[in-house]
Length: 155
Image (tube, rainbow, N blue to C red; front, top):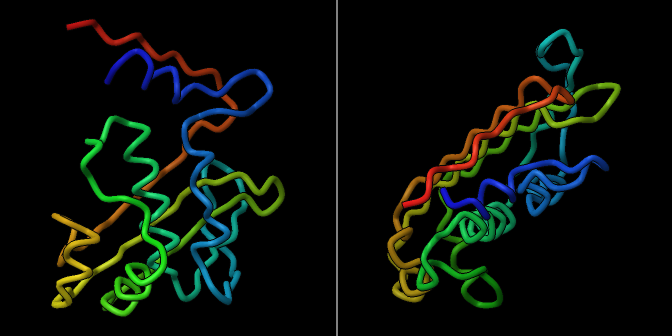
């Protein structure tokens, strides 16, 4: 990781930053269902699940990968006909978000998108990601505690 990438992960004193504000978790689920979640570091949580939108998830993950140095020739955000075709090719899409019941702070996000791609236009839109299973698991620990991040050693 470069110094700039590490700096992008830091949260400033006002609570913004952290490199993940581009994740639109509220758009990942259609018709979300809320249930009691596990206790996480002493906090009572809620688990949010529902029908996951593969385009919202993929576009967020594509954008996030760009923030962390993904190649410029990698996948582009999906829109229009390409988005429609990719949505139809998603055979399994799941998402679960766990937040604090009182503070609404993110504790965990798990998503999985499986693409069964036979459409050549979808393959063109996704490149090497076509026919893949994408999985992201994010756990947030020690919320609001000071974090020390060492600058990476340069090359």
